[in-house]
Length: 113
Length: 114
Image 1: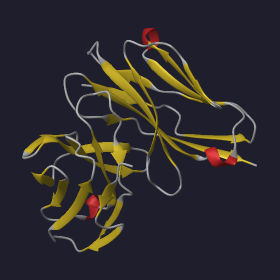
Image 2: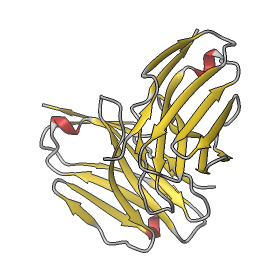
Image 3: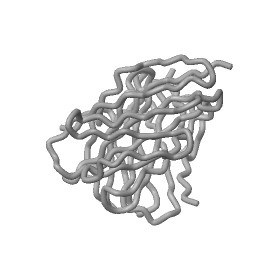
Image 4: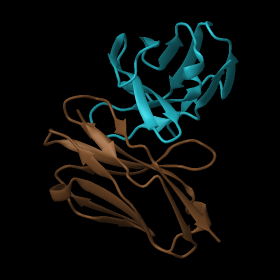
């Protein structure tokens, strides 16, 4: 079974802190994604990566950066956390091409106080 | 830019009723894929179905069926004889041939009451 693992289920951070959300997949997938989920807004794409060291901005990249140094790991970085970044963060991965579904991690609920 | 609209924010039905969840998409690509995902209360999204833009054949899987109509840019999902375990948030998503990303709709929260 494909497994996508996010390092934390719950996180509480202070405003201004640098926050790292880690995601690891074990199926050698080319594509990895970071979404945030907010009530009424669905899943909004922050960043995605289609290869090691490659990244593309999604719909809401402001305030975030990403890192993909190894194929299996995709990190989301909040450079200076703010309260409006309190949200559920979902990582996903998929194989090459369009015709494969994305597999999701269990999510990280981040609260910035 | 691709876009997915799920106009129904919340739906509530009584067990054994049929329910249809609507999904309308927008794309300029001729090659694309559509998906449905289920997010139960536990939170993890579960893949339900994938459909490519060249295959308009409807699909049935048990109590679930999907109706893809390119003429109306819709990919609707019907649950027949709903059950309490169907209660979840359902997301429709779109991937285009020009990029590797996947865009989701806002989701529909389905509540099935006993």
